[in-house]
Amino acid sequence: MTARDADDNTPDDASPQANPNDGFPLISRAFRDAVKAVRAIPEPRRAFDNATDLAEAVRGMADTAAQVRAEAAARIHRAEGLSIGKLALRLGISKARAEQLLRMACRARNDHAEE
Image (tube, rainbow, N blue to C red; front, top):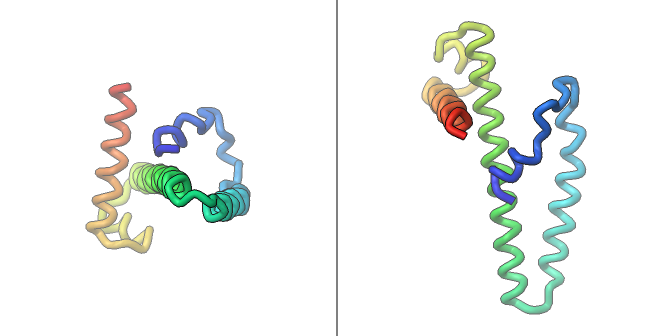
């Protein structure tokens, strides 16, 4: 699964009231099960290939999560009319990191606009 796959599987009408933390135990369990399954593969090459697929899927999910985080930071920035410095203080991150998150969110908006 790539970051793009994760985006494609997210319903556009997802309820803003939904608690994303509810899914974390399911994700953790699925990951543990996948690791166990890969470790149980007797053929080393097949185990390697499956481990590579798992790593790519997890990396894609992490990339998507980072993108969602950047978008949330941008939403706070716009909604509260904060300077970058105040956004950084509000989020407990450095000013440089706040700028990175806003650039990431801007790139995502531009990418979505081109689709």
